[in-house]
Length: 509
Image 1 (cartoon, helix red, strand yellow):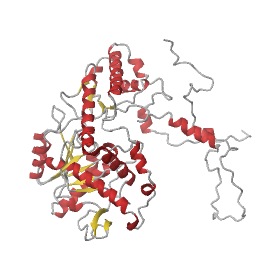
Image 2 (tube, helix red, strand yellow; image 1 turned 90 degrees about the vertical axis):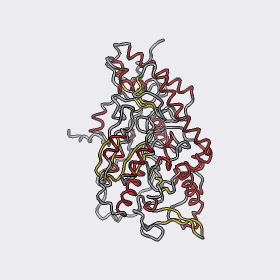
Image 3 (cartoon, rainbow, N blue to C red; image 1 turned 135 degrees about the vertical axis):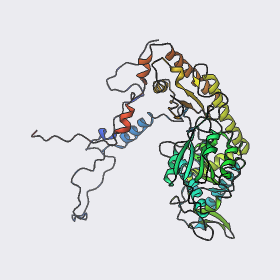
Image 4 (spheres, one colour; image 1 turned 60 degrees about the vertical axis):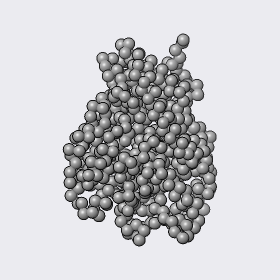
């Protein structure tokens, strides 16, 4: 087959792949999509603050603007164009029915400052969502307002802190966080004023229960466990951990970022969970990434429910009413407000549409399919890749870099080579407890045909790396993208965050 990958074109474009400059580089001072009449007054009403230099916005016609942003969008990899095997991210298809519901004028055009009598329908939707979340977890209360996962963690730990303060447990200043937990867990505990101590894992990729129980004492406020954890494994001693934590007078926080793997199959109340955030934007199919939108409702046990943040809904004789202020008769022990309004309402609509369209049986099947797909990847890819742990995984399969030993190919090189094959790379070098980690989460929405194509590609790349003498080729990947590999260290440390045109040269120069 003839290789056309190095053909150069006069325009710089390659067929339908356009070489698109920055919009500022397309600027023409004589072009504009809007003609404005000059101001009719002569008086300076700017208090002497008249601009001395151009505003810096590019002047383009409407077709140029449309083409520019359309071409930029075609350079993005998205869930609508391909498979995202990102571990711990749950990048799955979002049913268009959810989007249609979120765009209904009666839901999309309301405002949080409207009179309560005019938004009873929105309140009923939020109440229905809360009911689903409580039923799915078995816990009696839920705070809807947290804006995303880490915000939900913050909610749970703040409720725990408020409970300890109410009980006079001011000496409990330590939160224990296993090394297999999400990285936001220790950050959340620290921002709440706690000292964080790490608990090691065992040889099976799970919490070392003996080490954890040995550390429990009167200074421990809580234990934060991610379950399933970041190694894609279920913490099968979670109930024993919860019992030990409660016996020591502490609370059991469970990170629910991976709830997608256990919906409809595990009742959190039976595990002894006191608080858990739920990423609606991961478990219940709302689009996420690129900054949002997200939502992280936090379910609370009976012991923590009185300390839930405001606002929250209550039923009274006139319908549903929002309790807005901590200290009111309906929220005497609330720790306060976390967010300006009532939560991410558009995400609530999408999540409830997903739940109602699938029903409990469908949600249970979805979590089962997520686990089935991950184990399919684990078994097939084990032909060439090296799984980090033996046995069944949950929603994501974890591999390390032992299969690349003596090849000269790094985890980063291997992952970048997948881009040329049309696949988004999996999560690299995470979790940190596994050397050269490749973490893959197929989710429940991918077909067997897609997974087979992915597996065949990854296996072929692994054989290629092992064949020897390919280190340089892998290190130069990707080759077929609009931009080649960046110096990621420098990009992180010295990012170029703005475009500034070259200064104009004067004629005298």
